[in-house]
Image (cartoon, rainbow over all chains, first blue to last red; front, side, top):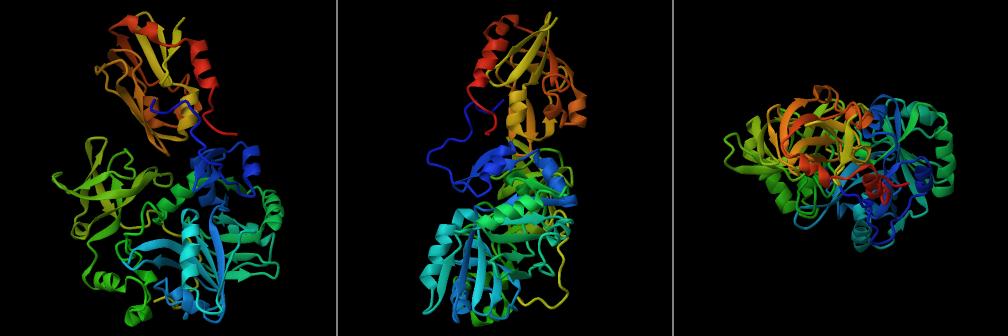
Length: 380
Length: 129
């Protein structure tokens, strides 16, 4: 077998823990290093945890991620120097998925931004980018705007059809719909959002409170701890990007199929980093496009697999994320191909020197079940 | 009774006469995680010691199964095609991969016995905690 006998965690520097790491260790979770943290990969099995989240409620430790607040009268203006979304038009209590851009129109990170009120924004950023993101935001702070990094808070995700029911047993702070968020007096921030395509919540709380919270939640039989393995299979089924794999500093939101984060009003004002490239791509189309690709057979096409046109002569793109879909019981993947080829349905994938036929697919692979508010979205 | 030997790459082999049955060990299946697909050799296929004979796809990665010995495949385990999870459930018994007719029985001499394989895997964990 191609696996090594040494511990697969080679500690070159001490791995950071979350407030729940000792719980995970006690539960016998298989651990894995991720973004400088030691995180649970799986508790029982990735497939079981994935299925549980789609049918009941999965609890995820996402304490490795970054959380901060940007406050002040000019907080909105500050953030709009980095993101192409109309944050001004975002109503109080509403959340937006957005991206931090660089001057080349590439994505520095994808972020969730909650407008707590006009002068307070709460952000959740990726673990692998948080130091970088905080620096970027710090550089843009306008006079009297503060940046507070919530190092004393941790983050949990509760996802699945039973998530709302479980959460309602613990708190009355229940955001009413997808992409709404509420903040309590004792510093708990709950947003109805997630990385799975299911209804669910992301819960930020002070660490001491979090331990009690989790102890209470664990009493419910429909809530189960799930690891990063299931988190990845769930988000891939949901067609969601993973920063560093599906999007990076060279990828524009247009290429990534995230044009919706570039609000109409901002396109007209041309007032965000990389607007030249982004507006040109919006007008003429990007050179490459993110697509779903479903192998016709059973072999899984993973990150790095080359995509060929039907004749198998020319490489037209690459897989950026691929894996097994427990819901579809077969392989799924996402990648980028030359935009012209998005019209042609069939491609070939070079998997371990074999040319395997595959079909392009729209995203998501599994329909989202998020509970939307049926009002005109603020971000177009 | 069949004699079981092991490779340092976590394959097991049960030998009876000039026939042998090959599978992967419990250590291997734990390291792999959920198995979702197994690609077996074809009956009649010639295998070479130490070369790729089968592929196991788990949720996390694809892994090669190397043949412990050289020979010709006589039987394959269709149960694995229907239910790849069998590899996780019964790696050392029900989830055998293939049977082959040995072409060079002396190759068995260099394989590990039970004790040697246990020594190999006791110094490490396939999972933390």
